[in-house]
Length: 529
Image (cartoon, rainbow, N blue to C red; front, side):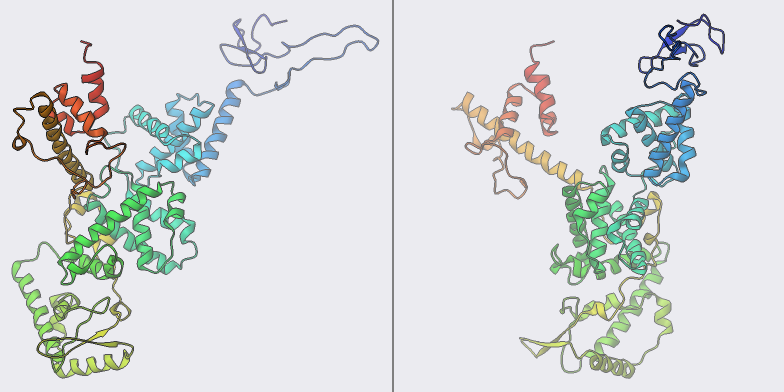
């Protein structure tokens, strides 16, 4: 038996809930009381009471459907924000969800994705962004799904004009602070690693290693490299798993970081001997050089720069004169460095050079005292044409603290300020360089395909001089091995390019490498207007 009107708003339109079976007013959303009463008259005991369907709150419930939905939604928001470590931002996330849903909130898996997207937008607006992979893992969805939801939230709230960029420096600091991999490391070493990591991550941004790429693999690569410099054992796989980054991508970013540091080391006197294999040993001197390069004031006059250089050269001559008695001494990180390398350990500024007046006799005494304190240095005799040369091998890093952390790159800088800094080397984006190499390789393949077509269609007029020789497997520009079956030095890519050339596709379009799109447009749908 159904009531004639609602007991709350006196309306006469009702809906039946499929799950609970309760009668709900379509106007106010309140559950109608006593609508499930079933009188059981008869029997020896008389009336038996009421029959309550399973899953209902009974006739005495004081909460409406809307109130229960709001309570569940708020509980879900608290759960997600607590899992992300954003309990203090619970009210901001709830307010954003309330605005987007027009005060109705919601239920189901999509609502958890919406909460994660709002949490990401809230932290991004405060320049403390969260990784999308971490949010996707918390709410239980795919990273692409959370990305689409974030775009919808940004567009709905019209935040795109003022939406800040992803702060990779904060991501590095958050990782080194919250990661369990560094939990056993001393706080002083952690702070030192943090400053070094901020320095290198901003250098990597200036070197375009993060352009158009996901930031977390680069963060993992920098932290692993900094850990090696400070003697901290870190397994890349564990750190990558903790921050939800792909291990293979982290290894690629680590390799690119080492290669760029090798380029930065080429200006040093021993730069030609620095490779990817020994860059970790040479990195302290390379980073120290980069620090000095950044700390140079671009507003200094040319006269001050010349005076600074002249003071450094004069001091170098004094030290060299003290060491030029009968033998020639060479030092380095691995044991061997020429005398001219002393300029990189000279005074830091002209003010220090003017303040320090050291005589030749004083330097000689200091040098003899140094030799007495470092008797572990092993003399290595080399063959010389004019005279004997004794090379003392020792680790100079044990005698000098290489990290100062006084440069501006040890702190967070704006992108505009960062790009104006000079770190000793300027590079092009690796993706751009690789794209240019691939376009060049495809251009050679196009020319080779035209040559094969010409040989088949016009064997008499075929001229080898009209088309350049195709790339073979020994060409240094071909970095990857060919996939699939190769017959007469022709692989699957050559056949696709040959097909596109036969369908008169422009060379500029083929060089871009979008083979599937070109095949759909010019081959499979060639008869459709």
